[in-house]
Amino acid sequence: MTRKVSAVSLVFVWTVGLAVLAAEPMQSFEVVARGPTPVTDGQKQIATLEPGQIVTVLATDRDQYWVQTAQKLAGWVAQNAVVRLEQAQPIYDQLIRANPRQPVNYERRAMVWLRTGQEDELLADYDAAVKAGSKNPVVFLNRGIQWATRGEFEKAVSDYDAAGRLGIDDAYLFVNRGVARLALGQADKAIEDFSTAIKRGNHSAGVYQNRASAYLAAHQEIKALDDLAQAIELQPKNPALYNQRAGVWQAMEKWDEALADFDRTLKLDPKHVQAYSARGFLWFQRNEPAKAIADFDMVIKLNPQGAVAYNNRGFNRQMLGKYAEALADYDKAIELAPKYILAHQNRAWLLATCPDDKLRNGKQAVESARTACELGQWKEWTDLKSLAAAYAEMGDFAQAVQWQTKVLDVAPEAERADEQKVLKAFQEKQPWRDAR
Image (cartoon, rainbow, N blue to C red; front, side):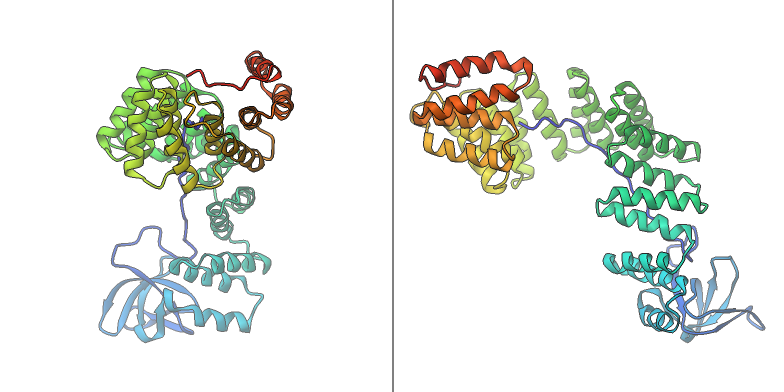
């Protein structure tokens, strides 16, 4: 089984406002000046766009666009004097070749990459802008978000800090930094950031949901429940919120409350895989393997490529003495995920200790146990225990005693009395049998 019973909801907020209106009508789009471009009020010139400047088109009239700059200046420009942002790369390439030390053109070309989904180029241009001396806080904010999407959260936090020092003090900065800090395991700092975002006016369900995740990570379950209640009040039909609250109840071993929230989740979303999986684990925790199997059946039906569900169903089948079915599930889990340590360990233990003589296979048990130990770098005592049992089934009690002795060296104190009994059996040249 897997022991993870809670999920963290991470909400990223992209900010792309290098030269974009804060709120655009659906029909608006951005264009880039090909060169020095006059802006008129319809009769006389009122401004000139510089080459590469990005403006937002709000309306069209024959061969002209009504545009607005980031500074809110509005006027007409000729359509042939500008190009759509997505097609503006050649303009910026030329400007950068002419003046490679000017950061603004890297910043603006990054907008092209953002629009076209070219993430490597986007990050490279943010790097180039910073190297060229950019002090634009949005560059650091957006580069931080790019680092976060790549899982490089320490770099993300560093850039968010820089964006804050350069003047960004809005809620979305604290939301994003809170997400990164939570991913780094800095729950207390994440709580501070989400709380600041709320003080800055972000009262969305997402920020309360994220702070609830941070509170749970900090073992402050009651505060997590309070935040999830607030999020549910804002979004009463969001199944993810009930599922997350069920996870908090589950962590508190409040089984009835957890089951009620899982039921609410599945009523809103009958195909919610995470809810079935977590509820299946809850049934396992309550020693109700038949109900656990039913939920893992649903997980497998909805996601037939999910190795964890096969492993978990196999473990519960083993609890019920359905050994052949359990072995088939472990085999399937390993087929889907050849490096899935727990499935190898469970398979080895079943092959070594199964009460059904027809299913035991010492040689295969040793192979699976050694695979689990190698994948786990020989650090997990339960892997070593499976290896010891496998050698005992092979009749190699010297190896069995050797490995079970190592188990006693590293097993938790609460487990050592039981493990001593296993060692005694091996010392008496008796293989171990699963008592389920």
